Image (cartoon, rainbow, N blue to C red; front, side, top):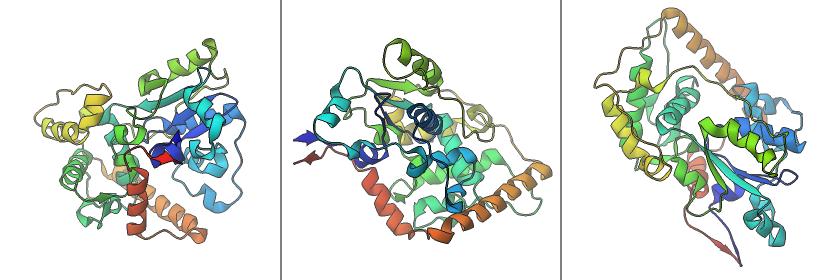
Length: 308
């Protein structure tokens, strides 16, 4: 009987056979950069052939379409081939992790604040108080928007989250179950990729570059001590089991209010994301929220299953 792993690893992993690499993505931890680099090195990239495949918030994000990146997942293999991928000394099995403070801020920016449907979509039932609406010329305190989101995220921990961007990294990559050769901090990704070729693992063509860049906000601009404490508790596995240390933040965060011009720019981004979402749903109507919730619960399911 061959061991199988939680669905996230089985179905979201990417296998580059020529490079002898198995990559398990961690959302908001450089996965877009790694996916582009793997597909380019493996030679599997395909151009989009339908307008709905272009309906992402940035050109970089189309790589998350399996038809575009062209890389199979671990679940596509069995028998001796799969066993070699999981145990062979010539194979690299890696994931990338990120500082939890920065990862949550990045996820909120990309999936809530700069996305017109707002953060209410990430909970079942939806939470209207988490909306990211930017009305008129009213100044937006970006820091307070983020801190409010964190409070609601933690308070709703018993509800059904439908977006794995906000899941703990540990629950996605499961280093306690999967035989990684490398668990790579995001800041060391470039050095790690450069070292693969020199070690005879992978290809010199695997060179991740920074992609899917968001608004340049740093944790020390929006966190206060109370918010940091909530994040440390919520992501306790990421801090305790992935080697990230807690940091000290001020008791009161400084104000970070967008000007009328900056607020108008956010409003324009919301309008753009509305139009892109319309394009995406022309041929691919969205699933009901509860269907998405069931799918995410399945994907994030824990435990090791055995295939007979």
